[in-house]
Image (cartoon, helix red, strand yellow):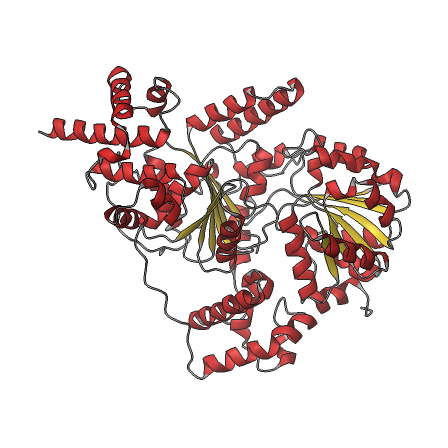
Length: 639
């Protein structure tokens, strides 16, 4: 029987769900009982609820240690929207705001208080935290405390003093990716006392793993094919470098696939804008470096595509695991090249600490074996994390026969010189064999009558505008699963709205009347606004700016791109004959030096040419001159 403050009633009241996911209720029970706890639960398993819900029930302050400011801010904002008092304390805030947060924390004003490990390591922090009524500490991304973890952070190591500073306070550690060795290290470093340990299965049945070795010619074409394979949801592409991010965004735009980029050299405002556009469903494809994604809670990602070999299986599992967090079928695609392995080896050799270098090479050997293996991908991942499945094949990876159609058809030997706009149109092909195939089909089945696609799009429009008005990601207003359940049930009252998945009391109070009004407007004939006409492709935009007399530096500034990206776009057009080379782009003496080097080592590879040149000659200059020479060579052979 539920009581007003039982976990089940709190789950319904604040989160709007009728039941817990596997292990959640047991973990919550351990924390409510005051037990130290260690939780290893894959991305999408609902780790955050495991410490957020007990924080509400215990009516004291749960202190959450998290490595990223953006992640802390998102979680605190979502909690406050649900009516749960939460705050973040970090160095980016004004001193007056920090002082206010500390003052309010001392009087127990928050159910959850988010701190960075650096903040907790300060002596003054420990002093005032002793005046806060703390229920327990929750250490998020706990694998960062271990030197054997793929994301070891020295500042996390300082959390080993937490037990000495707060001997009577419960400590809980949470991570999505920890091997057996890392788990033992977490227990030892945090000095957990007879902890309750919960290790969820690493087998995510709704995901399909596809690993394929490519080259510089086939990879872009396969990427386009893959992206066109998904009709619904959002798509996340990981590129290895800043330049590759921008080149990929421009390439996709040229193919008629709208996308945005995310990397560390962009301004904070541009990063925030692009992330918000992707999170609010304004644009479906985001191309980012590994700087993007930690803590990103977007349920409807239908595919995560890697364009290079990750540093470790743990990193791959964590990043790929951002797909399918809503439990529906999703793909994890790794399109790697042999040169990726060489680059990882180069970086490993730059590590000065012998022990860390050895750990890096161990991780390299593991991810290389995984990429080249012909064994079941799901099983290999489980074995890596210390889980031994009873099955040998999954039916949901390329090794077990779940090969997508877009990968089977051979690609052309050369990429097209010019591109034509295209739409993301085809549906998602799914695996067709045993247990995983059945599980993924069941996960994708709707409950009740099918939702009207026009109503779904109309509700997306409302959600998008509401999220923009409130300055929050779209999923904070309503998850995709809630939106589709809403479109199926079409509630006519606030009471009926509470029966929609994900609608707790606070969400109904905040959005109920507006949602009912939106449904009424749809019933009266209102429809979603037509999509905006496509803008010029990156190549067309660059060509127009050149016609206006802009320099390459001015074009880079106008288009918000690095100079190397602009030079790359122009080089492609020059080499294909779509644009004439201009002498003003490269000074005569530099051009002569580059041409001499090309005659010496040939035009096939850029790195050997660069090695022959003095430091004052830049890579963009090299690319432009080589494009000119390649075009001249092609014309000479044709004649």
